[in-house]
Image: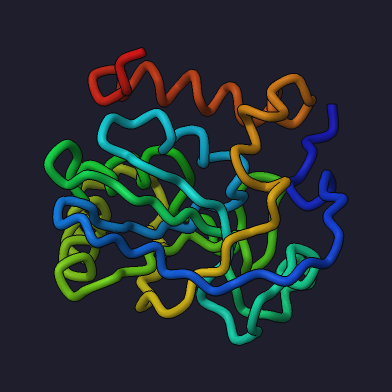
Length: 205
């Protein structure tokens, strides 16, 4: 079986999008933004966490305004596919989200996750404030020192600027397309592993 990549499945038409930073007036809500490779693969993971209010797939870290999926896949915009995660900080912490982040992708492969290759698939934490930056740097250093992976972590830390939500057909992707081959062979195994490791952190149905 040939491993299918994220970019091979898209049939998106070019659309205009508004820029958002996903802020909230509720004092207990905060935002984390992570790039873990193809956003299809990990969106459903973070959606299942207790305390996560909303997960939006999109693009950040580039220089083109309102990029489309095709433009990001061209590897010329500088953007990474990423997830904007709004969470209730009284129910789940940024450190706990980081723990999931490190577990659900390979942070040691530069600009690659599996069959998906290019700068848009880079491992990245877009920090929203200095505390997020410091906590990510500390966690990254501790993981590298622990030898959790054979190779060094290449995850980048980039200051959050503008987040562009992806086109509608990229949102809630696994839940809307769970019968497709990519979901069955790539996303589902990742979800099953996550559910076993983080069973105590999942939303109660």
